[in-house]
Amino acid sequence: MKRLFILLFAIALPTAAVAADIKIGFVNTERIFRDSQQALKAQKKLEKEFQSRDQEIQKEIKQARDLQSYLEKEGLTLSEADRGKKQRDLASLSRELQNNQRAFREDLNQRRNEEFAAVQERARKAIVDIAEKEKFDLIIENVVYASPRVDITDRVLKALDR
Image (tube, rainbow, N blue to C red; front, side, top):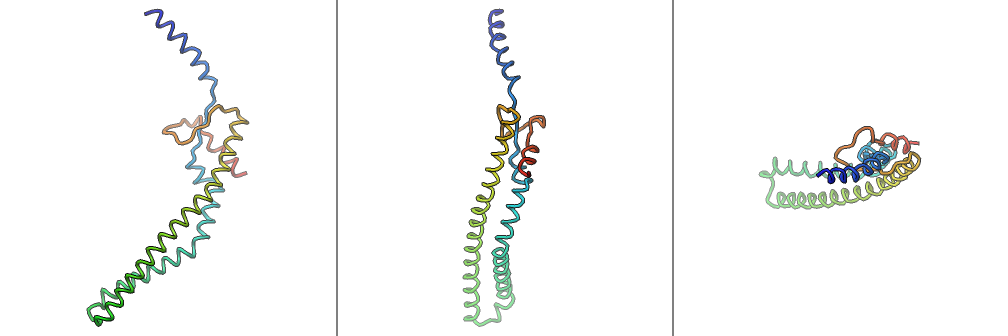
């Protein structure tokens, strides 16, 4: 038993010594994408780029609601032919609106991915630069818990904003 304890101690001692020399850092990528100047610029750029399309979709939504409301209020007083035409118009408008909304979401997601890929690339370069300058052995992203002592997110944000 004593031999086993000595053997375990002999194995654990070098491991503990090596672990004490390892320098680990953590980067909160969610904060990078939320708080960095590049991310904020990318978000504003996307909002500006897609503003007119969003306004067009909002107009179509209003048209569909107005037509639906008209049919609900005046549907009984309209002739059968007029009511049928208005219902077909509403169905057509609804299909067009759904198609436009789907295309808008797809285009927005694609552009968002493009813009944030550039932010991510710059963040990666900043992280590697910090890791090399400060002699980190390991930088980790996306963890359940990280002590503020190893969190280097603020340093990465500062490096990105330079």
